[in-house]
Image (cartoon, rainbow, N blue to C red; front, side):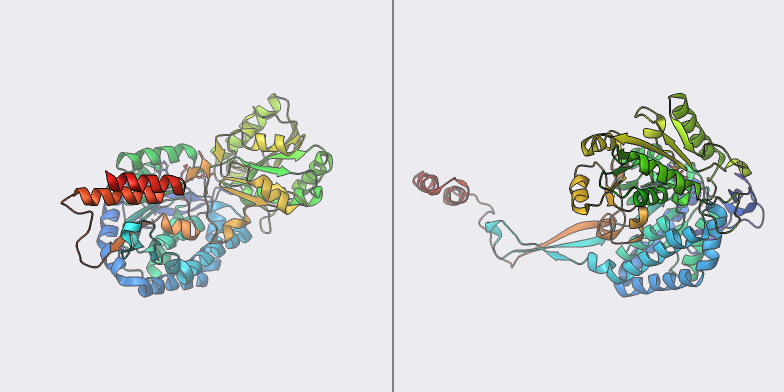
Length: 528
Ligand code: NAD
């Protein structure tokens, strides 16, 4: 972080634009060009933002469904109007092609907003319970979903608009207020979210945006004024966030990393599966939490599948050669490039073959690396165990489905997996055996685009869900309202022998096994 210049974009706290004397510099990862500066906040600004969100909470909660929907409609309209400008900013600051900025970020955000406007409150409608306890005949119990309060959202850079904005929209429709900490690698997009909220005239303090790096995120995760933390990022940081939340018993949703596995069955069309797997790996230049990294292909079709993957990968147009109309952009920063290179080096040192790619291209800003495919890989290589988060695909032949399942389940992570097969129903049966939050049959990360589908992982890929009714429920408190007409109850004091005997008769009647035992039990209770 550097000292602030006057042009640095301010933070949004309590409806006011606030400058600080520390800033982040935003770069274009493809060229290294400086795109602008954004003011950053530390624990003091996080505290001010949480207080502002807390102050705004009663009004937002009381505003009711119609007003909240109206506000989200304005946000939806402003984003739709500014979509070209926002997609262009995403492409420049994150590096992804405009097509992906429009589809994975802008469209997903618009669809999420539309879903919450249309269905959000219905998903949270009160539910009347069918009571099972016979003593409670005449009583009624309803479950209602209450807004939890202030939601802290800590976001990554790889889907810098849709991940935070869809989480903000879910929090708001429930009736919560928000403090958002965008990624330090995409601070201008974080600021653009603040501008969208301001342009949509959300009431002051309902959404607050504080830019910053890890320390700012840590200040938010540990702030006692937040009632939920929704964190999306790496497993390592997620564990720190979980500890911070555990210390104050604050529930959190953790959307963490994975090492996505694809199973290509013997009955799959190798050409088609290869096209699908190549997209599932290299979309967003491999910087997708649910990207396919390991492929377990049945040995009967391994040869044509590998040939087709190589052909499809070689067709990808890189940003280094095509300024416009490219398929894969740069990696976000030099550290990401180093991670990919070290996994390639480890694999090659242990006997892997580089089928396609493998080298650093023109090295613009140190972030260019070719889409790379490895064969002759083995399970102990880092590429088969650790998340690459870059354009590296490893293919391993297996004897049958059972071996593929064993390999896919062999890691402590379980975010997303895919099955490629002609027999879709058999694929669904196989899916039940995979230890994964999401399993896709004959497609890849496209399912992020549907706001009704719950998103999240198992094992160390995290817990809790965003999206759909599961995402909404994660941001609400469950409250039971039980009611009955005024009157004395048999279970109140004083306890009497008669009531105890009746209780015993009832237990025998309901819970002894078989008519004889029931009769015996009831007689014993009556004659006691
Ligand atoms: P990261 O963990 O480095 O950072 C994520 C966010 O956490 C950033 O805003 C960062 O500033 C903040 N942060 C850093 N240290 C913190 C701390 N101690 N306390 C609180 N916040 C802190 O991750 P990243 O590089 O931004 O994103 C890439 C990772 O995110 C990958 O592992 C990817 O798989 C994962 N991811 C998961 C999903 C999902 O839906 N499961 C989606 C996108 C990305």
